[in-house]
Image 1 (spheres, rainbow, N blue to C red):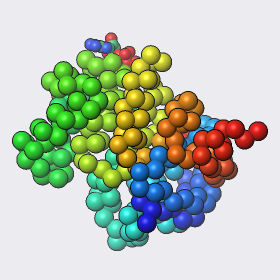
Image 2 (tube, rainbow, N blue to C red; image 1 turned 135 degrees about the vertical axis):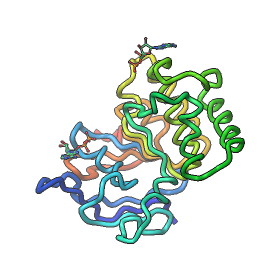
Image 3 (cartoon, rainbow, N blue to C red; image 1 turned 30 degrees about the vertical axis):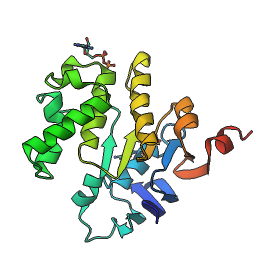
Image 4 (spheres, rainbow, N blue to C red; image 1 turned 180 degrees about the vertical axis):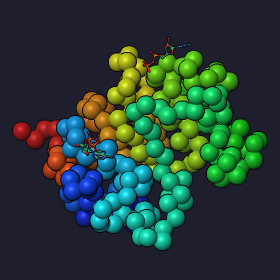
Amino acid sequence: MPVITVKDLHKSYGNIEILKGIDLDISKGEVVVVIGPSGSGKSTFLRCLNLLEQPTSGEILFEGESITAPKHDINSTREKMGMVFQNFNLFPHKTVGQNIMIAPRTVKKQSASEVEVIANKLLQTVGLSDKKDVFPNQLSGGQKQRIAIARALAMQPHVMLFDEPTSALDPEMVGEVLEVMKKLAHEGMTMVIVTHEMGFAREVGDRILFMDEGRIMEQGSPEEVFNNP
Ligand code: ADP
Ligand code: ADP
């Protein structure tokens, strides 16, 4: 069974149709990289997947359950889909450790000692164990994004969504963030990644989706998509 199934997904803002019928199955452990020109609907598609945007029509199944059905509990799905944004969205008045622990504490009601263990492990994963007690403004952009990834992972999501995670970074910091994402991919995380990093797409992507004007115009393995004349 696919982790995510998207059926004839449409999204309009007013009378402007942005997504014009997306169909897709995403398997467990699959790394799907979404590429395409600016304004083609990549970000809107990602935001529909975890219901930050309400699709206009169509259906999304997550682990076999329709999450677009009217009675569906959106929060229970969001907990299982971690999302990382271009601009980090860390809480500025909380330390790095607090940023990572807040959702498991408040949403999942996990104990302080339990989330402490999770946070320490995740800080190690992203290579920032020494930053636990500092505030986000004391971090570089690349470090902030690694913490944003750790914070999303703290909820132990089944899927991770990345919306241009390196686009706001100085070039010398892009690599450290892509390394963390690559590590996740190798650990078997199911991921949907919107990015302009073609080297990364080619190396880490299991499947490339090329979006244009609200449709998937082409998809396939990196070899198929990038070597197509
Ligand atoms: P991409 O991520 O491929 O650059 P987006 O999904 O961000 O594309 O945007 C696709 C189109 O939808 C753009 O034309 C954008 O202006 C429009 N759009 C995105 N969000 C909104 C919104 N909240 N209201 C109206 N139009 C929007
Ligand atoms: P961005 O890539 O998001 O622009 P910067 O690397 O420019 O991030 O860093 C953002 C802010 O954090 C800047 O004011 C910078 O001086 C500061 N900064 C960066 N690295 C450190 C650090 N290791 N310790 C303290 N402050 C830092």
